[in-house]
Image (cartoon, rainbow, N blue to C red):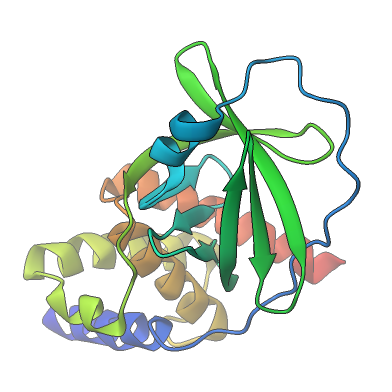
Length: 206
């Protein structure tokens, strides 16, 4: 077990290194106003500024730092830029010059992001913004490593991957990111890993 945990730590630390960025979508003309009341002004500022929002979509996290910086990550993509809030919109300018504007609304007891085009994505979790640094990987306890090891081993067994293979490495990276973002439940991590595996298989078949 100690050898397996040490091997996973090597994989996980590799995942904390820099990653390639993908170009964000270029903003399209804004459609008609949504049919639900959106957060605006002080309410939108209070909801976003200094917060990290986790969505129920492919491990997507958006971070709105208090100094105006913006960070994005999912299981594979990392991106950044700046943001501004005007009225009921938050507009993001990405590092490559791309731009998009979103709105947020409270529908029932849940918050949703409303994208240009009207697509709604549920916000699963809101937490204080805390940028991920490589040194955080070294702060994982023995219990953390054992929990991650079990999930990693099960995914490798299910998928038939070699533990030092490329897909296993990508999953190790995904697991550590998801864990540090707050998903510390083994079953939830395993489900997220399975979704990520299906996504990789789909992308490979295109």
